[in-house]
Amino acid sequence: MSFFLAVDAGGTKTDYALVDETDVLARVRTGTIKRMRTDSSTALSNLEQAFHELTAASGVSMQQITRTCIGAAGNTVPLVHDFYMSEFTSRTRGEVLIVNDVDIALDAAFTGHAGVLVLAGTGSNVAGRSEDGVVTTAGGWGPALADQGSGHRIGHEGLRAVFMAIDEGESTTLTEAILKFWNLHSIDDLVDYANRTPAPDFSALTRLVVQCANAGDAVARRSLDREGSELAHLATLVIHRLKKTAGNPAWIPPVAFAGSICENVTAVRSILIAQLEEQFPGIHTVPGVVDPVAGAIWRARSGSKVNA
Picture 1 (cartoon, helix red, strand yellow):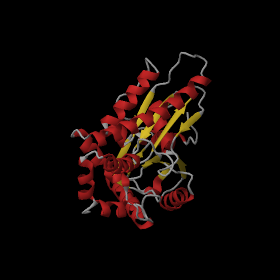
Picture 2 (cartoon, helix red, strand yellow; picture 1 turned 90 degrees about the horizontal axis):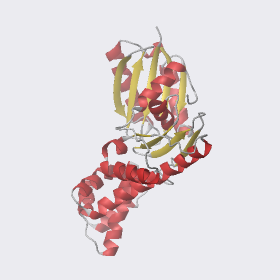
Picture 3 (cartoon, helix red, strand yellow; picture 1 turned 180 degrees about the horizontal axis):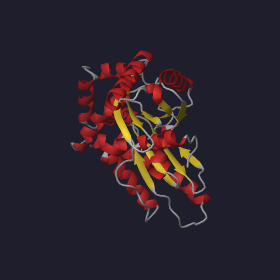
Picture 4 (cartoon, helix red, strand yellow; picture 1 turned 120 degrees about the horizontal axis):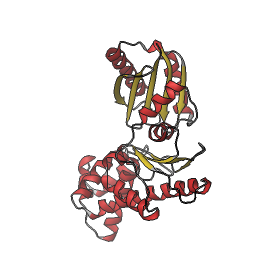
């Protein structure tokens, strides 16, 4: 019997599935193993925890693994790629495939078919697969350059909106919420803290922005609406590219979603879908969110390094 390991390595959490040819034998979740988001010691501790729990739940040793597929943002960055290749090959038997997290999410949503996947979690990306299997993307350039609609961007832009509100004389409950969360006592403290090097974890502010928006705070709500609109713009770019290559000009690719923001932040998802429906009447958006691990399972079992 063959055993396969599927991994979705996110910026804040990592999901693992141990499977055989037909069944899922065990699933666990740990903290991140992504070296761009944490130090080597923490990443290794999280990885060892996952392997221990998988073996305990399934009775399968990691040395029995035939093939592993890891989906991760920044999969070509040497710090990320080299860590995964070194640590997984030393702990498992067989081939290790390292692909982008959008690839496994596309596989989970549209294996063998065309479609668009909007992924928004700690980071963000939009990818589309054409009817002949060609993949095109928009966004995904990392927190300093893009990540529209992501947890990092929502937190950072929410904080920026606080200071624009100060300049414009608009009140917002977000100010006090952030001061309390970071245990700061004044705006001057907040300025110093936000501009420090290395920068604080802006994605940790996402929950505050959502809570304030849900409570009726206009500044926080505008921040969420803006990020939803920017995600919609990226999705629109990808849809137009796919339509241009399709044989049928009336064809509109379906859109699926993945990531914690698409799953949990209703305001961002609602604006995103509303703008897509306005641009492309009749477009089909897949309910809920896809499980990227399902795509990693398919790749691990098949050994595929490219999209279906």
